Amino acid sequence: MALDQIDCAILGELIARPRAGVRDYARTLGLARGTVQARLDRLTAQGVIDDYAPQLNHSALGFPVLAFIHIQLQQGSLETFTRDLATLAQVVEAHSVTGDADVLCRVVARDNRDLEAVIQNILDLGGVVRTRSEIALTERVPRRDGALLEELAPGAPSSARAGFATR
Image 1 (cartoon, rainbow, N blue to C red):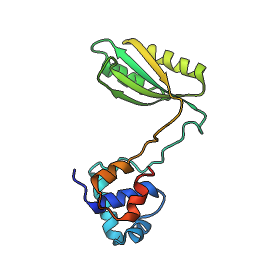
Image 2 (tube, rainbow, N blue to C red):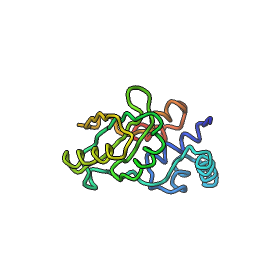
Image 3 (cartoon, one colour):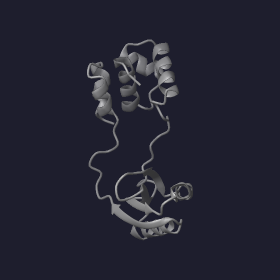
Image 4 (cartoon, one colour):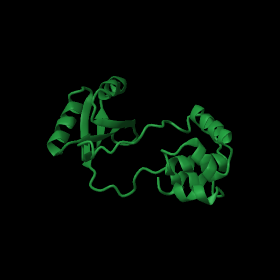
C-alpha cells in the first residue's frame, strides 16, 4: 500500500504521541479533524495500523529476562506445535523462520530458573528436535517504526518528522 506524506505525518504523530486525540493531531498537522479521522480509519481498515493497544514493559511486569529460542521441529509437526506453543503465556512472539531452526520465539521469564522451565515446557510440547537459546543482555535499538516512515515520506512536515525517530 502506498502512503502519502499526510498519511505518514499522521502516523508519525500517532507514534510520537499515542495518547493524544484526533483533534490534537489535526491541530499539530494543520489538518481538518475529519481528514485525520478518515485517514486513521482507512489506515486501520487497510491493516497499516494493527492495534491501538499499549505496548507493555515485560520487565516492569516482573519478567526481566528476555530470550530468543530457536526451535527445530520434526517434519510435519509445525501446525500442531504452533497451536500448542500459543498456550504458553511467556512466549510473547513466535515466527516461522528460514535457516537451521523452524520457529523463533521471543520469551520472557522471571529469572534464569524460570527461563529453564519455559524452555522445558516448549520441549514438552512434542515434535521438537532441538532448541537453541539466546538471552538478551541489553536492548540496543528498541522497537521503532518512525524510521520506516522517514523512508516513506522524506518530505513530511517537520512537526511529524520530529516524532518519527523516537519510536
